[in-house]
Amino acid sequence: LARGPVVPDLAGRHVVVSAGGTREPLDPVRFLGNRSSGKQGYALARTAAARGARVTLIAANTGMPDPAGVDVVPVETAVQLREAVLKAAADADAVVMAAAVADFRPATYAAGKIKKKDNQDPEPITLVRNPDILAEISAERARSGQVIVGFAAETDDVLANGRTKLERKGCDLLVVNEVGERKTFGSEENEAVVLGADGSETPVPYGPKEALAETVWDLVARRLE
Ligand code: CTP
Ligand code: CA
Image 1 (tube, rainbow, N blue to C red):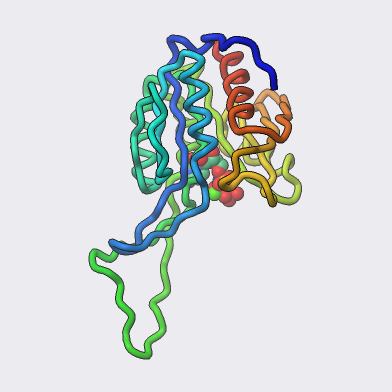
Image 2: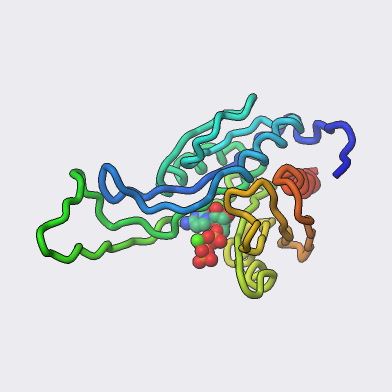
């Protein structure tokens, strides 16, 4: 994908990117988590910085080194991610929610390690819902004209599911990818369609996560003009 010299079209902008996957603790040694690597979020942070933006990267359990020239806020849980996103979004021109947020968390946290007891079945784990951060920031809009982007991995009727989700969340753009073999989790490559609240559909062919990131920033920059 040949691109010309980097145009600093995000200079003077503050963008917030969430990356990785939240972990919801059960006890001091165990958590419920997911397989999100954080690579797409890091690609978004790097490319935005290269295009001149001030970048806040809210990193949930990614285990990757901080990208140069980016403010990194480490978090673990969905509740911590929400706090960090709301704080950073207050003066942001754009927010991209690339993180996989656990939908539920254990209702209780055991301060001591959960032990098994002789010949006893385990206690069931009760879950409660986590806050929907993307829906919340889309409804509140900390700043007028702020551009908000979500990500969704879907199966079956990917585009129809994506449209429904975009409307339900109230964001401006939703990057939809199909969950499949070589795609998405831990891979270096991605393929997606970016749906716009204005009805637009931008296909992004299978390729590096950087290329998808650049397309996201192209669409964001156009909406910020
Ligand atoms: N998201 C969020 N807060 C949550 C769940 C998801 O901000 N509690 C964001 C994700 O970061 C992502 C987008 O919403 O950008 C879509 O996530 P997804 O899991 O596909 O949406 P859900 O509403 O949780 O729908 P589903 O039931 O399909 O998981
Ligand atoms: Ca979910």
